[in-house]
Image 1 (cartoon, rainbow, N blue to C red):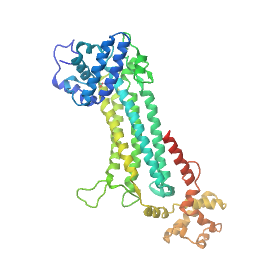
Image 2 (cartoon, helix red, strand yellow; image 1 turned 120 degrees about the vertical axis):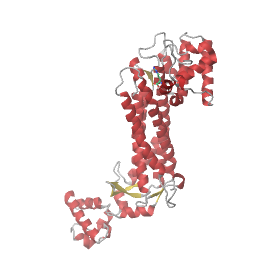
Image 3 (cartoon, rainbow, N blue to C red; image 1 turned 90 degrees about the vertical axis):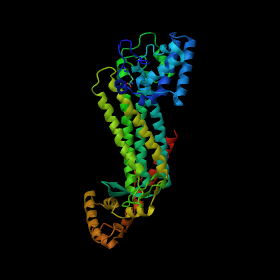
Image 4 (cartoon, helix red, strand yellow; image 1 turned 45 degrees about the vertical axis):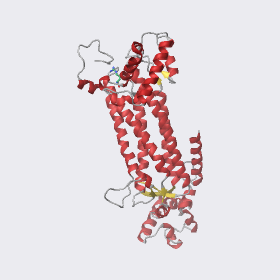
Length: 459
Ligand code: ARG
């Protein structure tokens, strides 16, 4: 029973197997910084409210500082019989300063304590992730700028559709990531709220100053209902959801990198530093890293469903089921951070194979829509023009030709409206130039979008 935070009402100690099953220390030890940060603020508050003396407060703060260093150096021994990080730290405190250490938990429960620790942890993760997203966006923009006039085939249904600038394609991901950042910022607003003072579920008695704690921990508000505060895990769900969506975006980009690096596409070369080989096939160069990011996306989805499922049947207020929140939460933070951190440098070292890409842009009638637009300028309805261009393509295909390879006489057989101005509509770079509409792939529009992105990233 020694070291447990409870025991008064128990006649016998716990079975070792129950201790082991109950313990969360093997994963919640990662929250030691947050736990100590919360305890330091709590100690100051107790001092300020006169519940402990100034000297006592200083002694506790110093001991917490020491414990922090000891854990960082790996000197604190973790033991399943001490269940969780809160118990370990309180025990270490009592070992250091005796019965004074027992005063720290006055008016506090592990229920509001863990709610605080995890909120602080999510707050830290969000700050880190927003920074990593920013770096990743810079890599995207740099890649776009380095290849600013490269035209690639744009796809729908994974069939060549229309020419687009590579920069435009990459900026699509910039936009997705921008929304991710704002989702994290929103989640942070609801995360950065102080639950301390809620105690086990009904709110603390004694004379606690929650506003002081809120300021001390730099939180943006205090929770309004103690029962909600100790059983709310919405902030975690939101964090994992924002992460799942971010991972979906990364996964889509990775899927493109994987496809583009196939021999079938042959659009890009991933740097040797970020690719791997095969143990049996000497010729292989595999895109393991993008594949793994794509794979890990599933894992974050799993974390989201796991937490939602844990929560869905829980009556108010705290239930031990909620201890199951930590692993999906921390795993999500790790996965997102690692994925962003590896993709940024990988992206920087991608080379585009301009010759194969050029061929791909020129084959497959990607300019057909523009030819129809041209006929519209000559007075046809778009439906007529669409049909007529379809006929032209059918005939060009039979003769193994692209549209620009048809001579004017051949073209005129389809419509007398066609004159030699038509060739200006069949050049992919001119197709791009016609799309300087806001949000379009025209080079001027894309240059503006790049500048705008640069400015956003600076601010
Ligand atoms: N390890 C617990 C958790 O993660 C801390 C809160 C424990 N509270 C309790 N009443 N047993 O949820």
